Length: 300
Image 1 (cartoon, rainbow, N blue to C red):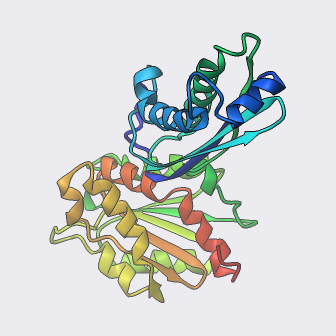
Image 2 (image 1 turned 180 degrees about the vertical axis):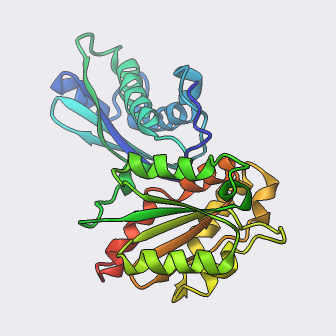
């Protein structure tokens, strides 16, 4: 199975449909409940729900997931029955296969219950109507001329004793969104960090991501430096990052990083460890880019 460990939980919704074609007289008998097997649509609805819940048992590479809602609807026409199934879940993977399985099981059950009176039925179409959720539903268009910067705060890296990994991870992630960031390595000196933040803000940089200096070490001052530079804090950003990290390591709770706004610039403190940085980026991108739309007064 494909790993979904790095994905975030979002609301996933998918709707699928399946159509069964039968003789008009068969449809009439079904509507009148004049059949050897009674209550066709009631049984088909139960079968659809059961199929949604059992999809991981039927499709080998489907991940088990907590299904929150299954809605089954039937449209009965002169010579057909259309089953529509909508599935909702808050999870890391989509629910389109579950919706398709439910819709197809509904029509297959109807087929089974009508076959004593109609040997010419056909299940003609099973298709996905819509799906949403996951990071692809939260892609944002970057403002024109968008500029970003990465600040690595580390005495060891600044002196050449340690190779930077975390800053490069941030840089690569930004580049994957088409952003070419400035890249700076500084020692753990509060005044130097603040001077660089001010310089970048004055140059029109809209996103500054720092790495390092968020822990409990005696030289960890990035948070204090940032706190004095921002106009207002945006606590939800680092709350999301810490929550994501806490599900993977209990040490995530020890990060003191904060996020805030200085003018039109968003400043975010990320951990110094490469794993901490990677996990934090998974948690906040690409949703963080939505903040620039909000700052323009365009809301959600």
